[in-house]
Image (cartoon, rainbow, N blue to C red; front, side, top):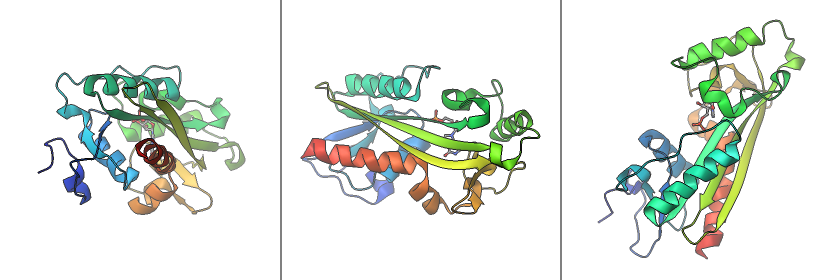
Length: 216
Ligand code: IMP
């Protein structure tokens, strides 16, 4: 039988008794499942941090995605005694000098909805022509092992900010983030396609390679 914290039933994978555990360092169950699904086939049994007694994570700061992801991965590795994975991500707008960046989840103030944050961003960019609306999503993933091994990988998706939102899928800034090669916003993409091209999908694919190396 799987351990109670295993995420494999959702993923249709069977755990193996000999597989080491990988703790996904988030207390948000939906995000844990998403990260586990993006990792795909790895030689670890993926478990959620919330199943570890005393589970807690350091708050995200404003310094860098890397510092936030590493702090969470280290904390989860220490708590669980297992390899841990954490991510941090954000939207970087060139015309805003890379803002909101590491503060993307907090941009515009506390208590705003995703739609409010998109509206605040469109208001701040008001009047800028398309060629000055370049932006990218960046995702940084940190891996930490109890023996001190650490690795950080990242993925980037380039695009530009539209003048009005389009699409109903995804979350966050997806409705205003237009991908020129795909000709659609991220909110207009089929979720499987978004996973393939997104900053998070790319970063998790790189993390998968690190984990396969660590397990070898
Ligand atoms: P976190 O990595 O969960 O802390 O997310 C940071 C914030 O960046 C999110 O709350 C969103 O506002 C934004 N963000 C990160 N990735 C995406 C994405 O794929 N689509 C839309 N917004 C994103």
